[in-house]
Length: 172
Image (cartoon, rainbow, N blue to C red; front, top):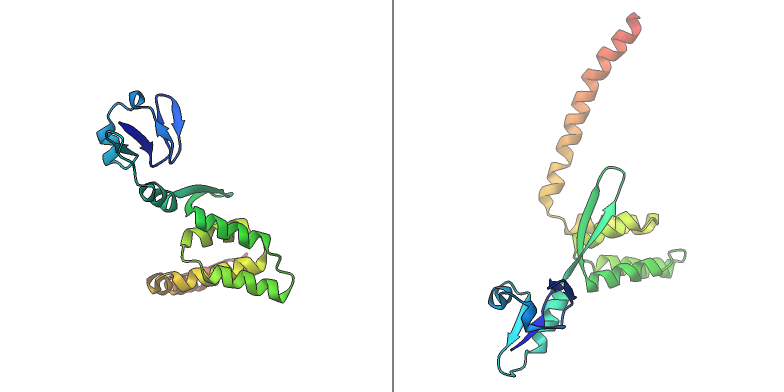
């Protein structure tokens, strides 16, 4: 029996990555691990289709923790999305033609997590604006309709609160 890791895993204190062969004696319950998609098992010398292994790699998402003053946020991106992130970081935005390249890259993004990562980690104003525009474009309208309601409520609350403060200030 041959066991191949389909996901990064740990057996018997040893780390295995996608495509690594795992010694049979380290896996306590191989059938359960196979059901979970952690490993692939080949019996009696049959080969494991590499498409099965490489498909898992392209689907794999990497957690990225973004630290802020308020709280930490974890986003998950694929390897391809990570490549787009670094492509955007490497293009300067001082020239119009470079801005156009960055804009085209950002407009091709379908992952809200990647847009959040760009907005949080790339300090350039142009990139932040483009990421926000794209996020608005791919975010369902339902969230957009909720945005004005708090603004209306905030405005209504501010007027009554402001009036008593002004009156109290005038009395003192």
